Amino acid sequence: MSSVQMLLVVLLLLYLSEFVVWVRPDVWFFRRRGRGWEVVARGGIFTTPRGSLHWVYPIPVLSRAYLVPVHLPYTGQFPSASGEPSSVRDPVDAIERQRQRVEKAFQPLRWASWGLMTLTWIAAPILLQFLGIGPMLYAVVPGLVLLMVSNAWGLYRVHRRLFPASDDERLRLVLSACLSPLAAIRSVDLAQKEAVAGFHPLAVAAALPGFHGWEAIAAEEWRRLKYSESTDPPVKSMAHPAPPAEDSATMGEIEALAQHRGINTANWDKAPEREDPANSQYCPRCRSQFTRQAVTCHDCRRSTLLPFPEGP
Ligand SMILES: [Zn+2]
Image 1 (cartoon, rainbow, N blue to C red):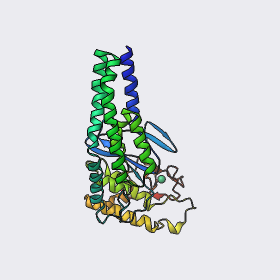
Image 2 (cartoon, rainbow, N blue to C red):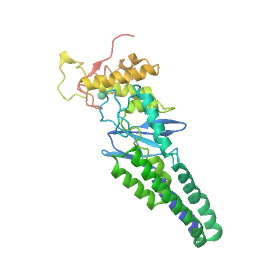
Image 3 (cartoon, rainbow, N blue to C red):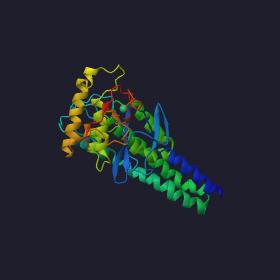
Image 4 (cartoon, rainbow, N blue to C red):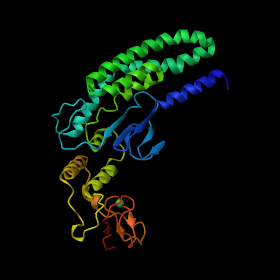
């Protein structure tokens, strides 16, 4: 391998390292998949109890991803990312508007992103091959500097207007975009990661075009809210303690979203198909199946199991 090829490989690895995202466990991570979107809850390149590392497509526009925290109360009134209350009642509509607003504001920076991409991955290698490193740097560096400076300045201005409270995030974003052309290529998509952070993740999933597997994650979340992970000893008379008011409200919102999508939520609470005839109980929260001896669910630590309904 020649030194030029070696340099390109190192550059490529550095470039790819810009396209991984660290996700905390209390955050839903939405990324592009094919023409649509998906949410990534588990797995990843690397996982620890404090978070996990996930990849995004290493191309501007397709590398856009959203981080949506789950701890925010979901009450039907949705703050926009800039903190002002939104008057739009339909969350799906509000999310789509907010996403479009942020995307449009950052639109002009796309040119800098594609310009940097062309200089780094097309112009620089060709010039390096034919002219050598000195003349290549003479030709490419002024263009890189010009694009990086205008990108960083635009990034600072648009980010300050859209997310005035995120000072630290803005500083980090602009600094890294100033220091490396590879980080600058990624910066315009990275700047939008909190565009829909004030909304409930399931509403975000419902709003993203071509989202994969909405019903499965909605049903899972709905059951998680309905059947709490109780550490108390099971009380016979209270096999179905009512979920707290806040959870009930969220369940109502999830049902409304499902109905809007033409999904029948009655199936979400039905017993799962028996995987083994020996299984006589199941966990209503995570749907794991158990034999007669089990008393608690070892998957989600729920302390009350339900018997499978008798019948054919
Ligand atoms: Zn369970």
